Every structure is written in structure tokens, then in C-alpha cells.
Amino acid sequence: MKKKKISKIINLKFILIVALFVFLDQISKFFIRTNMYIGKSIPLFENVLHMTYVTNTGISFGMLKGNNFLFIIISIAVFIFFILNIKEFTDSKLGAAFIFSGIIGNVTDRIFLGSVVDFIDFRVFPIFNFADSFINIGVFLIVLSAIREYMKQKKKLLKTKS
Image 1 (cartoon, rainbow, N blue to C red):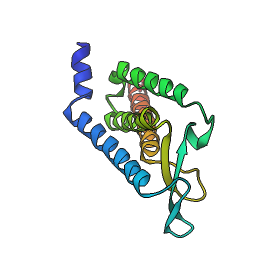
Image 2: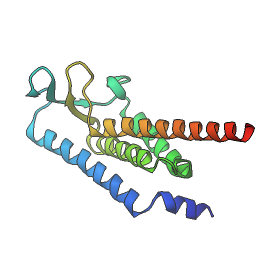
Image 3: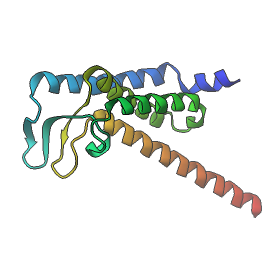
Image 4: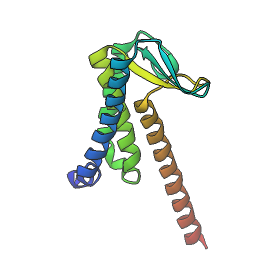
């Protein structure tokens, strides 16, 4: 029974979405690494959006720098947690796919490069990458799904009381 539920979530479409997002993340980082040097910034829209190549051994916003190995372990643990609890995400498969993609993209950098490549620079926000965006989008979609499910259950409960 458990295998059927998991196979309904992790199917070929799910795997292809994750693979596409990881590819987009990794190809963008490869482009930055091979065409720029660390610290270089190229304005795409002056004072609004720049491509700025930085590396990060910390987590979001550069916090806790220098703990790359710890974040590899944490990333793998979170990934395993998601795999073991994947059946909980039946209502937000896309959200789970975004989160998986982000984790895989950033942990790949940490393992093979020793740090995460960041390059999207809005000048008023810390520099980030596509994997970071994927994680945030995934969390947003899962929270939205949970709110929608809560509202549906609340509505059903109100109907039964009437």
C-alpha cells in the first residue's frame, strides 16, 4: 500500500521536473563560474538587477559561513526526511519537486565545489541562485496547499454542523 502512494507522487513526471530544475540551476552556475571571476558584477538592469559571482559556505543570507560540511549533512538529512514523508505532499507535488531541486542543486555545489555559487543580485537583497529560489517557491506552494486543505476541512466541518 505504501509503495503505491509513493509511486503516485514520485513518478516520471516528478523526476523529469526535478531533473529539469536541477539542470537549469547547475547550467546557470556553470556559466557564471566559467565566464566570471569571484566578485565581478555585470549589470543587467543598472542598479536593479546584476549578475554578481560570489560563493557561500554558509546558509541563507551568508549566515554561519564556514560550515559547509555541516550543511551537506543537514541537506542530506532534510532530503531523506522529505523522501520518507513524501506521501504527505500529495496535494503539493510541485512544491516538493521545487524543494528537492533546490536541495540537490545546492548540495551538489557544496560537495563538488566546497561552496554554493550565488549570482542573482537585486542590490537590495542578499545574492542568491536558482536553487535558493526553488526552495522558497516550494515552501510557498506547500504552505499554500496546507492553507487550502485547512480551509476545505473547515468548510466541510461547518457543513456537517449545520
